[in-house]
Length: 273
Image (cartoon, rainbow, N blue to C red; front, side, top):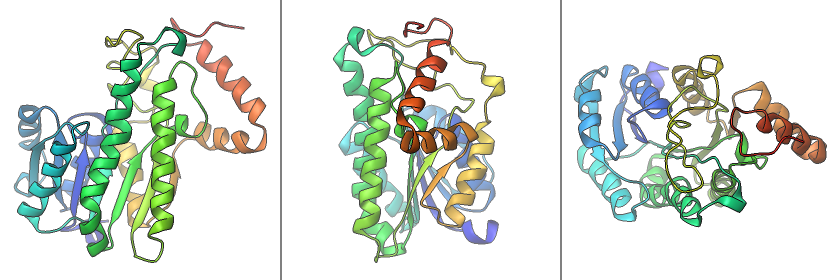
């Protein structure tokens, strides 16, 4: 792994916590040149001091929902390192509410960050990735294969990312560009604490047992593997793989199971049937 990633220039959005931070740490330990992007610049600077090889880490303040920030992120990277080898579109937010009760601004926020953030960063990085025959990654979810009740905006954004990246792969199938759709499943992180409720406020407390989930560090290792072997798609959990299978084989059964499972969450917005 070290031989493969050494000196590769890797941009990671949403790098101040969770999967993004774990991924940045792993790639830094593999002697890559890491660009950490997030809205909290001060937090990024503090985290950089704790990173392996901090001299090879560049911190860039960026809200991926803002096109100009994404353009600046790519420009700063090229200015510092002269190239881009890997773009990890990781930044994202979640939600938890029935669509019937939902303020539409919540879906706009999710699409702006999750979907448009991926679009903006990929658009501006693409010329450099084509030049290096590099990789672009989109971090999605099982919710990008089967609609997750109570998460309409989240599922919509993840379906959109998967569709975008799948099409991008076909467009550049002869250009050496590697495109990977990466679906971790439920991962121990703060994404559920910050999930938006029907009125746009943050949930504040996760409804799930984080201790039983895959760690962000393990997810980072899986991502490195996928990049090393240029995988097109990675579903990391048995539940994710089973969900994908039944979505195509027995869609009615997949939907029935998902409804039952999500209705059992503590304080679920979904009515039990």
